[in-house]
Length: 99
Image (tube, rainbow, N blue to C red):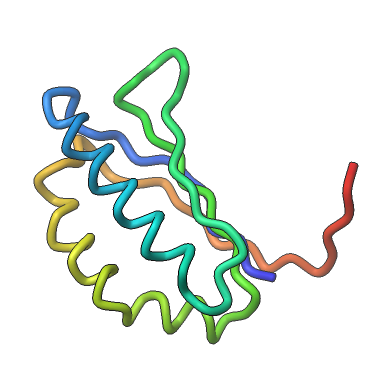
């Protein structure tokens, strides 16, 4: 499993637009083959800080995601919404179990 997790700061005055973009991206991405989960979250103390958390079956599924049309649209929209660099990491997970 591949997990993508991190944060991105958005421009406070563009928050509504960022929420719409994130919701559209999430819905389209969760319909992709190999996507186990794809969500954006807002920080409770800082509404301009968004978290992203993705789970993918494989590297191949993630690679297909980066070539999808909705990813291309999202990447064109993002520069007008973000207020700083993203801090996102990729994790290769060997096993998963409930806590």
